[in-house]
Amino acid sequence: MAKRNTYNQDESLRQRFNWHDYARLGHYLKPYAGQMLLVLGSILLGNVAVILGPYLMKVAIDQAIPNRDFHQLWLLGGIFLTSLLVAFGCFRYRIWSITKIGQDLLIDMRTDLFTNIQRLPFSYFDSRPHGKILIRVVNYINTLSDLLANGLVNLISDIISVIITLIFMFAINWKLTFDSLVLIPVLILWAYVIQKKQRVAFRELSNKQSNLNAYIHESIDGIKITQGFAQEENAIQAFDDVANDNRDSYMRAVKIQYALGPGVQNVSTITTALIYFIGIQQLGVVVSTGTLIAFIGYINNFWNPIINIGNFYNSLITATAYLERIFETMDEKSTVIDAPDAFDLPPIKGDVRFNDVSFRYDQDEPMILKHVLFHAKPGQTIALVGETGAGKSTIINLLSRFYNVSEGQVTIDNVDISQITLDSLRTQMGVMQQDTFIFSGTIMDNIRYGRLDATDDEVVQAAKVARADDFIRTLPDGYQTTVQERGGSMSAGQRQLIAFARVLLADPRILILDEATAAIDTKTEALLQEGLNELLKGRTSFIVAHRLSTIQRADQILVVDDGQIVEAGTHAELMAQRGQYYELYDSQYRMLQAT
Ligand SMILES: Nc1ncnc2c1ncn2[C@@H]1O[C@H](COP(=O)(O)OP(=O)(O)OP(=O)(O)O)[C@@H](O)[C@H]1O
Image (tube, rainbow, N blue to C red; front, side, top):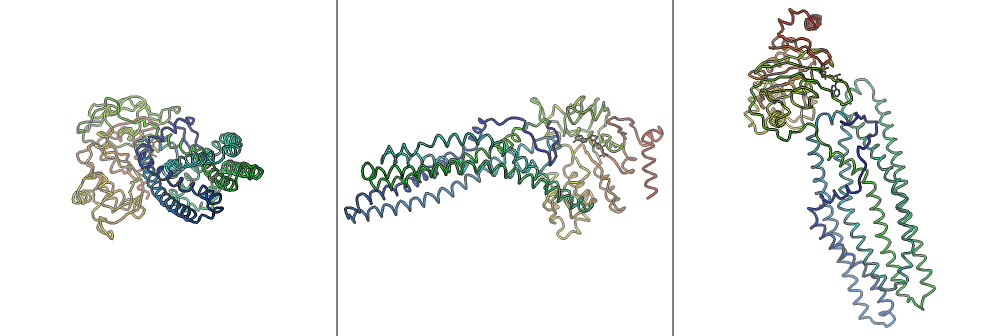
């Protein structure tokens, strides 16, 4: 697993970028090969139309004007006008088509990346700020798709345009053409020298952009805490730091990036001056006036695409920094996957065992769970209790195989869960986290998340059983009320009732519930208790329990301490033992009495 990373820590790459990886991009371009060929055809036609201009000028100056041949002049003018129209049409088609290809490419790459992210295990998300994942899916892909569609077609068009121009130049005067190319090797050397520095600078910049994104994401997520503790000034200061870092690395990167442009520009200007110099010396001897004027036109035609090629090369180096991050995420392998011979778990009865399970989150950290052993019979309710950080949530996370156990086995109906397909395991399990997640959408959609093919009636029925129906009907649009991501407009108790309904609809055989600790008014508490009782019926349930009532009713209570199960039994049995549970219960009971 990757080392943990925070917003102000630069991410290091696990593998060095391999230039051959650019070949992988070919895979994305393949479906658009036909469309790109059409675009290239239009570019070719457009280029010929543009390049014709200086040649027509030469004929006009050297022949039509001295001979006072108006017929030829009109003809040349007509051809020139038509060529302009053709160039305009080709240009429009090219812009439209390239934009479309770019957008389609964007969807393809983003879908691949997003699909892989959906499959990644909890450990991946534990180890990095979510803003750093976000920037890869949104910003980096944007840059890359533009480079692939627009940049690549422009590159090919520019190369074609250089070749056609060169052909015309050679046809007019081969000696002047060679003189025009004399500084090209200098340019290539210059591009090579700055390339290495540029890659390093843009890699650094991508890190800083990622940090900035991570910080913004984190601070928006935690805005209520920030305001609650009046820490806005500190947050702004921290933001300033990452934003300044970002600006500084941007300035360093563009300083190197823009070193190429003036280089090309200077070489182009010197070459033009050189041609004037040589041309004027030989004017009337070897070079006619028309030839010199046409040649100067061609030199511009020649250098414009060369400048563009230089820019493309620049963008390519820049995009490499983004590309390596995108590929890294695309190549990230899930460690929690189906075994090669995995089979579907048949309908679960609900017998669950932890056979001597030990677990650590990180390879180089000590075991968090140590030799955990218990057996839950079908339909039983198991309450996990213990001090904070004891390992209760870790135990239930292993049950749904959100992480792989490090040692031992977890079995359901006597089948090791590492041998069955994840899908068949998780679709038969209902997991409710302490902080119920609400997606943006309607209440109806949120409950239906439990089973997407449920009818409206089934959703309402589930809400009724979960005791959520009453409060939903008091909302302005009832079940069609729109709620925001995380359900900010609902109370914690209401969010839990929605979650109960969601799980009831899914009707899982095994229920895993991290009970909310938030203080809830007695009326909602009673409702939640009723909803919970309905939920527990006929299922094997694991509850990280905080309510005394839930704990007392459990068939088995497991007392977790420092990653081990130190006591197990019913409430009466454990009270009689007068051990840790007794003390825990006693202190909680006294606390309740005091309030
Ligand atoms: N994703 C994680 N990566 C690394 N360590 C973790 C992770 N989640 C939890 N831990 C560590 O594992 C230990 C057990 O945590 P766990 O969340 O299972 O405790 P808990 O008993 O559920 O606590 P609480 O009652 O406060 O929720 C703690 O020391 C915690 O710091």
